[in-house]
Length: 165
Image (cartoon, rainbow, N blue to C red; front, side, top):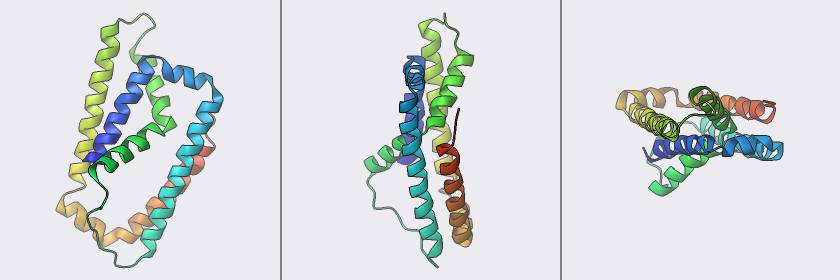
């Protein structure tokens, strides 16, 4: 739940940055976007390596993480804030949802409603994937699922590194 909260709050931060115009400034400087892409791609590759390592271990048992709650929150926040596609999505949302002459209350409403929706959505995912039937399904197919995630993260890192948008 704390990881999901971090991702959801990160989405809210992107909303604030976009509505305040900071992401437009960042997108004007290609170097900043390039740095963000590199860090995002490296993080995805690190996740791929972890997934492949886990998939290669037979019979691993799911155990509670020793990571503290704050670390999980910060990890979720880092996942969202290093995702350049999140910034690009927010630029599109604000571009469609707010005009150049939109009043302050419209931007605040967009930030609050989208942030709340994001937090609720990610928390719902966390609850859903924490249920016993889903955990049992994961245990049965863990190696295949984690190998698939390794492939996915590798592909996502490649796509992010080569993204020209």
